Length: 180
Image 1 (cartoon, rainbow, N blue to C red):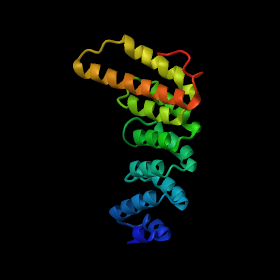
Image 2 (image 1 turned 60 degrees about the horizontal axis):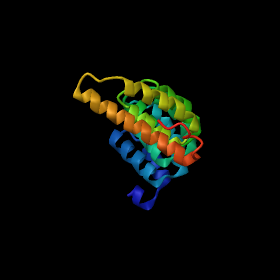
Image 3 (image 1 turned 90 degrees about the vertical axis):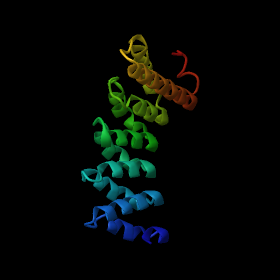
Image 4 (image 1 turned 180 degrees about the vertical axis):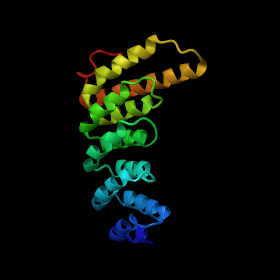
């Protein structure tokens, strides 16, 4: 009912409700409304272990740059909420996140390499091209031990290639002078 009326104040109040399902529904309704008043309360929910991942996803959906700084420490964690924060940072598209995402990219054993590469591609920061090319080169010289490894390697390579292409499209051919 609050969502249908666009009652941001009521939804913000519901974020503090004792029932977790009520809080979660309010979180998603606020994200759906993309109301700027929801950003700070959602940032506050990043500290709530029960809602961290959902709050990060909602902040990425809203896309407000105020969420970048609070999401960056979370994005340094691998798996779960850290991966969700990576996606959120890519969706927000603020170049302040580039260095944090490049640190995550530097771990090619990370099963979310494609997620990180995708976020870097959406950011469009040309500083990411050379590190991505270096990882792509390292991936291409390794020989996976099994079929699953070969599939992951192909996925990672494709994700990185797509991200590089996205950055080149956003910044012009000068970034792509050295094709991989």
